[in-house]
Each structure stands twice: as C-alpha cells, then as structure tokens.
Length: 227
Image (cartoon, rainbow, N blue to C red; front, side, top):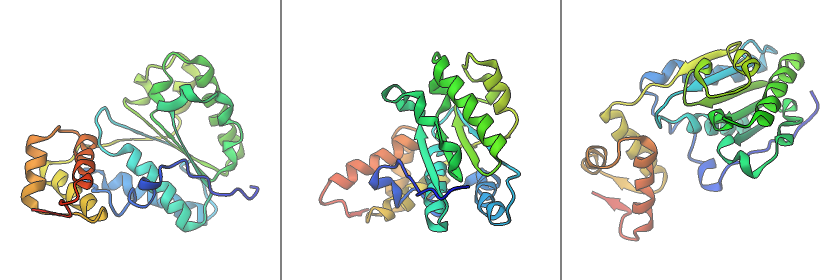
C-alpha cells in the first residue's frame, strides 16, 4: 500500500480527549478489546476483520470509539480517515474515492444515507475495493443492526453482513457518573461524585447530553472546582 499521510477529520477539542483511555467500557469491553486488536493484526500482516459494524439506537459512545481508533492510529503511525455521514449533504459521494488506501477507514452514522442511492452505491463500491485490496480495515457505525438499516440498496445491506457486528450496551448510572468525572478531569474540571450523581439523575439520560453539560460548566469561569 502506498504511503498515505494520516488524515483526521476531527474537531481539535475532540482529538486529545476521545481516546480508549477516556472511554468507560461498561459491558462493551469485548468490543473495545476487538478494536484495539485491529492494530495488532495489522502489525502481524493480517486483516482478518476488515469489515466491522457497531450499532446502537442510543447515544452510548459509537463516535467516541471511532475517534479513539483515529487517535490510536496516530500514535501507531497508521494512516486513518474519519467521515461522519450526518454531514453527507455537504459533500459528494466522490469523497469516498481512494479511501481504500488508508489503513483504517472510520465511517460514522451510515443510517443517514437513507434515501440517497448515489451515496449508497458509492459506499458499496468502497466496501468492494477494500475487500479486493485486502490491506485496509473498515469500521462503521449505525443506529440499527445492518439488516434493519433504512437503506434502499439491498446489495449494500448484504455487504454489511459480511463483517463482524457489535451492539453497544448502555452504561449503568454508576458508569455514567464515572464517565462524567473522567471527561471533566480531562477538561481540567474537578467534579465531585455528588455533582456527577446529580447530573445523571436530573439531566437528560443519554451520554451525549450529559457530556454536553460539561460545556456549560466549562464556560463558567468559577467551575474549575465543581463540588
């Protein structure tokens, strides 16, 4: 495979914090171990799990894990690219051309391709190129099992079933509290267990909303010590 410079389409404030270390695994340890093993397989010259699909209908950290892969790829000197299909309307399907030359290809929220046959065909073609080349690894996320995705292209849904799938499990309230305190610490905030418990009990339930609450605390100049 030709030399490709690592390309991370990540917001600057996410790049350093969305890592495997900052991800609270809960019941998702097997999945996290699997993603970390992808790098071991590459070093050994194997690409057994070239197609990986992660799904959940809740905000449980699918994007976080893709960011973590990109972060680990940077540390390992492995080429990696990230694309979120939530913004596919701002792009053209041609953006998928050539992605097979990256070692790790992270494609987030593929369910957003619903109703766009040109994008679905482009993704189908990319999967075929990755399979044929056998030097890259695809990791994709969606909100449903692959066979239930709202995709018009039957061949694409069939291709997605070729790989290994993982359903992400929700965190317990205690694990949500831990995730909040870990992420607060990464922002330089000292959050007490009582505050984390209050947010989990009285804020919105999904992790995305809970983590967004840290933005409000971060904007408060008196919140460095949240107790």
